[in-house]
Length: 326
Image (cartoon, rainbow, N blue to C red; front, side, top):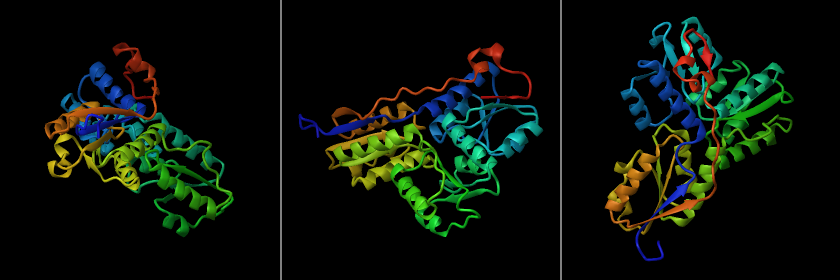
C-alpha cells in the first residue's frame, strides 16, 4: 500500500516486449510497408492475440501450413523458429522467405546442429507441442529426446551416455528448469550443457522481476495470451513466491470481485504483450478504486537485434527472387 494509504497499483519493469518480439513484429510491419499486402506469416508472429489481429488488419495472413501459401509468395517465419524441413518445403514451393526467428532461438538451433554433427544425442527441455520446441526437435531427427519433467528424465533411455548434450526452450521457468537440469546431470554426469543458459535474458529478467513484484503485492496480474509460454511461466513464478496470480489478456480480464478487498495489486506482462494493454489494465484498476500507481524496476534492458539488411535499406532493398533473409 502507498505511503498515503491509497490503494496501489505496482507496475514492474522489465515487462512486455523483449528484443526478439520487437524484432519479429518490426519485420512484418516493414514487409507490409515495403511489399504491400498480402504478406503470409507461418504461425502467429508472436503469441499475442492483439498483436496478431492488428497485423491481420493491415494485410498479414497467418497460416499454419506452407501448403496454404500460394507458390512464389512472400512468407515470414515467426519468432519461434522452424525446422530445416519447413525451410526445404519453402524452397520447393519457391516461396520468398523472410526469417523473423528470434536470434536467441537460432542460437539453440545452431547448438543442436553442432552437437548432432559430432554424433551426440540431444535432450531438449521444453513443452511438448510448443511451436519453438517443434522447430528445435526438427534440427536433428532421430537424435532428439524431449523431456518436460524430472519424471521424464528418470525414464530416459539413450544409446551412449557419454555422447549426450542438452538444450532448453527459451521461455521456461528458470527454477523448474534448474531442477530438471540437476536431474539430468545426476543421471548423466558427462552430459554436455550450453556454456550459457538457453533460457533467454528477457525470460530470466521478467521472472526475477515478478518474484519481487509478488513479494510486494497481494495479488499479481500477468497480462498475456493463454498460448504464451513465458506469460504462463510468470503466473507460476508469482504463485511459487506465495502470491495469488492470474493470467489476463487485457484490462477486461480483471475481476472486480478478486480485487475488491485488496490494497496493493501487482502488474506485469509477458514478452509478447504490447505496452498499450498494460496501460489499459492500469485504467481498469483505476476505475475500480486504485488511486496510486508505483513503478518498480529490478533491472534495465538495452538489447536490440538489427533487422535484416535488405529491410534496413528500404523498398529498393527488398528482394525479388526466391531467397531468404535473416
